[in-house]
Length: 123
Image (cartoon, rainbow, N blue to C red):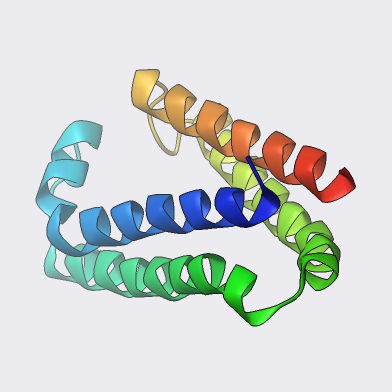
């Protein structure tokens, strides 16, 4: 498993999240027990668009850079993913979102990608 492959897997996961935010806002809100509103749908679609952009970068970055440059970029991307993970844990801790198996799976998956990025960027 190469660093480029991990980037592409992470990009595919981002595309999944983007599509779920674009098309699954009702289902997401229901899972949290939230009432769906037009502003919520708008914000979810905007967030989904940013996930889409980020996913494309993760998918394409291995094609745009050398292996050495990819390893260098990974340091910054690990930091950004740690920030994203910290925000998710913070929202669970403050009960802004309910804790449950889906959230813990997401935390585990994000942690796994951080570990894989770190491991393969050091190889």
